[in-house]
Length: 317
Image (tube, rainbow, N blue to C red; front, side, top):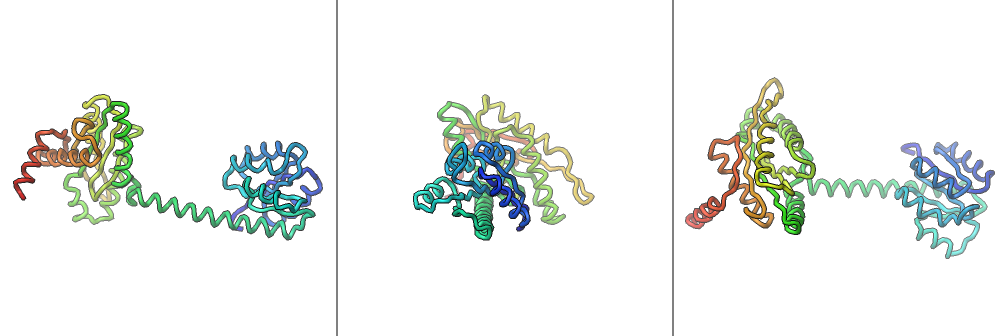
């Protein structure tokens, strides 16, 4: 066994409990026993068991009826039913109620051990598969360096926030942040140092935001922020100022001290756009104006600016 597995033996016969516990204990399992269904539930509430071996006949309930509440407490627990009845109806009922397997009486300890080993192996394989699937899902929605949401997850959250804002007639803000001259760090000190700085910057951005806000990394030195349920337009500006202050503190790496500045563009729903793509595009437009006007600042999107950009794009065709 890779680790100490814990087993709960539930049987009204003391001799059976003692013998089973002794044999399983010698095999390296950690054993507890219970003589009733209620005692088993009390022990299961106090700690996690990897396996429960339950006799079908208990003094206070049917053993099959104990399986669902045990499974509800610990969904990954392996449940094995002991029965003296080999009827198909009993077997199907036990399996439908969460049992992994059932063992017939009189007990053959070799069969008990083999059944437990098979059930635990199946559980471990299922757990590894589940963790691998969760990891793949996480990687599909987060960028690997900082662990922040990526563009895809950000747009999903923004779309949900917009639905909520429309329903409740609320405002929300989208910010696009671009680190000023960050390419110089990578060019002079290498990407390893740049990556470390990005991790520190990401942590500072998270700390500057409110609970419920989202910060996502969408490019090498670009971040998107979602600020749902802002009461006033000025609230977005206050958070932008808070971010500028948070990034003013010097960053130190390998004996070098860096001062990072950022250009921020702000678009507010519903005035600056009513869908995710429009808000992100308009925040990007405002961010470029912040860069044009000296960097290390924030700018709010203006409708006139958007019209000018459209006219320039049309003229360039």
